[in-house]
Image (cartoon, rainbow, N blue to C red; front, side):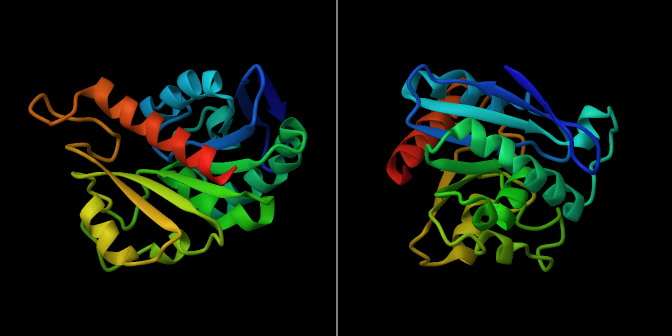
Length: 215
C-alpha cells in the first residue's frame, strides 16, 4: 500500500508492507544516494511482515520529486516529523521502531524521542564523511534515549564496524552488528565471508530480533 503524504517541503510517500496480525511497526527512511529499494530496506520489507512486523518505508519529498541531490538534514527532519502523525495513525497504538539506512538512520536518531519510538534501527550509519574521520557524527547516534541497533559493514568507508564499536564504547543501549565484508551499500566481494543472500539474512534476522525485544 502506498500513501502520499503532503508536507511543507512537498509530498512524501509511505510504502506499507503490512503484517496480517502486527505486533509492532518499523518505520524506515532511505539514504542520500538511493531510495527505498536499497537491498537492505527491501529485504526487511519482504521478510518482516511474515514475522508480525509491519514495515513502513518513507520516500522523502526530494526523492518523490525526482531530484538527484538529497535535501539538507534539517529539511529531512522536517518532512519526517510532519509525516509522523500519519505513521502513528497507521500504527494504531502498536509499538513504533524507527530507523533507516545512512542519512535515513541519522534522521531516525535525531527524531526518535519526538515521535515516541521505542527503538532505533541503523543500517550503515555514516559515522563520518569518507576520508574525514575527524568529522564525527557520533553525537547523533548517542541522541536516542532508547535501545539502538547498528548493522555496519566491515569495509564501510563512512566508518567501519570496528571503528564504530570503538567510538561507541561500553554504552549498553547501543548494539553494533558487524556485517562481514560489506561496504556502505551492504555489497560484498565474491571472496567475502557472506554472499548477498547471507548479508540479507543477517540484516533481517538481527532486526527482527531487535524489534521483538524492544516491543
